[in-house]
Length: 532
Length: 96
Image 1: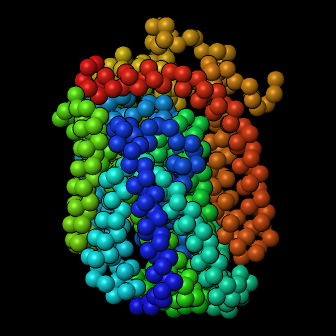
Image 2 (image 1 turned 135 degrees about the horizontal axis):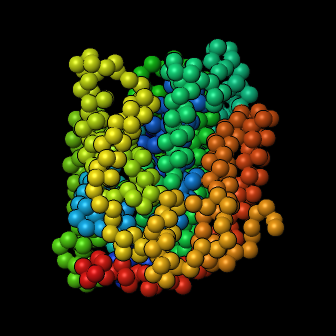
């Protein structure tokens, strides 16, 4: 338990009031249309979605997770957090293509890229899955806040979960994405400043940079400050092949859409940027901030390791960064720290509330139930969807202990087997909706087989995760590639329309030729070297 | 002809060219160097500062390469966006 003085409570209350008012102020803009409620009218300069990317991906559970991997693996643990680097290439490839498609959501993009029944099935599936996923993330992150409040104040876990998510819902319901992005800006700035203050404070408490190195050397743990301290090529707890697999997944994944679970919130930020250029810079710089933040955390957590090197329980070591703040900051500053924790919590909750509601409204209600709905009606459906997501997240949060393990497995399988198809749908004209749909279905079966069923029956050994990834990728391809070739290509008219609008990268020659034949595009200028 | 093209017409900028491919290589490198350089600099290790400085130089180079092209792509696309949005709303309302 932590004791708060008056000044501490002052910071907390002042910040919550400020953040909520800031969101509500944009009520009039948010209610103008669905494009305002979910995309802030597609008119934001790059730095607003950028801070939103950063703030959204700085959640209450993020320092817990980063503390766990850094405490266990040392500085090389930063590579566990490096999956966000898919934005390095995406910012200049798939972001550009997606922004030009003008799709509200990734689900909508499926019906612009593909056609017919397959496209509609994909849209329905991705929309439904995203509504569920956002509710799940809300429950998960909300419960992390519940646990933190239990640790700090002894509150029952449900109280922290419900209280802060409900405060956040006030401005999301009122102003939609306008409220989200404007509060995110304020929350992102507060969170970054406080992360810097707490991390430097922690480093100082642990003896300063030199002191930490000296202590680690004395403990025989000097290797912990080497980010490339691999345990072998394929052996040990941190093999080189894992690192290389991670790099491939993260970096090459940037050519696709949906190769990382974070693509979905980023897609909303991409469409809210006022130009293609703003979209690219917002995704790149928001993620750069995340990369820098992780390194800052890592050094502070290594300082914590130097102070407490013998913690065996993961649940304890995962609290490393929080403990530096709550146990070592002076009275008056602890409240500022907690206010920043509330800020990062609200930014994540608000983003997922609005994102989940956008799939429910645009892809399910508008597209399938009431295509002729007025803008006013759609904004109200957006609000009702937000409320349903909020209530659903409370239920998920309260049953989280039982389902977390299963859903983390679900997250993993969603990533592994559809990684390559998510790239192919962007870069290869011949890849069709049936190929992509079959990759999702195949992945569901294969991941159960490879990860659980076959090892359980001792038909194959329990494989390291990097091997599971490659095996699922190859096995999946053996299913979706034949299906792609055995089914018809997408309707050429749809492909041409999509090509002219989005100008995708990759293998699109037949579509390009057709667009030129129809007079929609002029013949290619003098060959641009390296262009496909 | 200069190695890096910095004057683009809208039509040229719509092609994927070597400037894009260069950025695809530089950008992940910048992230790796930012991650490693920031951490090692905080430990006050000299090579951390070198890596961080190299990351910032590469970042400047990346923007220098891609910004003129992104500006050209954006300027051209904005002129067509309204028409495209109307088209998409027709699809959404099952009018097409």
